[in-house]
Amino acid sequence: MIKLSFHGAARMVPGSKYLITINEEKILIDCGLFQGARDLRQLNWEAPPFDPAELNAIILTHGHIDHIGYLPRLVKQGYSGPVYATPPTVDISILSLLDTAHLQMEDAEYRNRNKLSRHPKALPLFDTDDAQAAITHLNPVEFSRWIEIGKSFRFRYHRAGHILGAAGVEVELRDGGRKVSIYFSGDVGRYGNPLTIDPSVPPETDYLVCESTYGGRIHPAEEPSYEIANIVNDIHKNKAVLLIPAFAVGRTQQIIYLVNHLIRHKVIPPIDIHIDSPMAISATDIYVKYRSYHSLSPEDLMGDQCILNGRNVFFHRERAESKALNRLKGPAIIMSASGMMTGGRILHHLLNRLNRAETVLLLVGFMAEGTIGRKVMDGEKEIYIHKTLVQVLAKVVTMYSLSGHGDYYELLHWLEPLKKAPKTVFVTHGESSQAEAMAAHLKEERGWNCMIPNLGRTVEL
Ligand SMILES: [Zn+2]
Image (cartoon, helix red, strand yellow):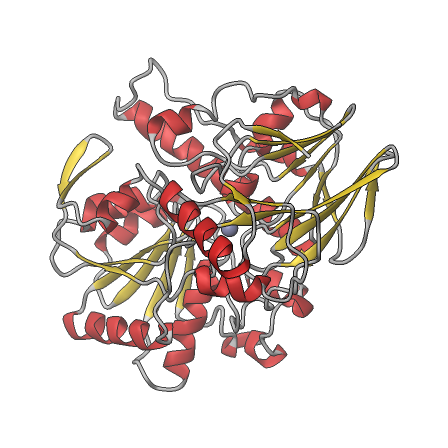
């Protein structure tokens, strides 16, 4: 008997965890953290709805925390098998898990020092030891290579665009004489991003698990560089600080790339970029190491002329350096995590700068329901940060053109080569409104049978 259970990213974006059960074997696709509203985050603290010790393998699609951030908890609760990921995803996961552990520990310490916790003692969800323990399970697997797990399961990776190394997972299951195939889309990126390679044509499979982050949206057609140029030119004119919530790996490099590209072509004057993160290093090394996974040229990645680094890019690891940024005068850019403003050093920058009219806050990523990021994006004028009421006087700008996810039109384009209708498309990784819109588009355009699973739902295949 083959079963598929949805233990995350079901009628929501965060928490990706899909459990495949084939007789006695159990494989988990992605191992993401829940982010956003408090009751959702609470799930990260509870025991998972399956026994981690019974899992045979974990297969990761890419290095974002909503796909990998639950790994340290799962290892701590008894998971001892391999964790497969593409080679760049292994490197990004190591950085991301350690960075998140540091941020969790900093946050817990800050809460305890300032008596901000509702609990007697604030604890990190996982610390650096937990992250280190999880990292030892990572196993790199190249794209296209079939990997057998047990007698009845094999998988291979296909390119998904999105971020460096991101993949979709094609799964083949054998139950006696019966064969079933499933394709997990992962997060499907956009076409023409120089920091990734375009998503590859999806394989024909019996079932499809398809993301729907922007299943009801069409992204603006304009080039993100025009928007960035206008914002940075304004920042220069007003000697202001541009604050961008973003994780240290992935979108941070995309923004550095765009800004440095504009400086190089003299569209904007030079500007300093500060990356404030405990693990902040030049992620350039990862892009140099994995040349075939993006389309930047070797010249783009060299020395002082490096488009992802250069003399105007500063990395701040220590907390004292992070604090010193409070006194920074514009024009300058500060990038800091977390991307959805759920914790991390970005909160301190918001406490310091959100109530200043000259600050510009640029929102470039997805903001889950219940996060401070979503509140600010929705135009709330007063928000609580660390129990302090802060007036939002800063100018808030949302840029969808920098999204790492395709809109529904791009998703339909990506699926266009498929001739055979999947038996069922499970529409996941989208809030209900987006998932429903995506399912409606798939029914209308392709006549495909769609289902939007609720959290915890199990279906028999
Ligand atoms: Zn992602």
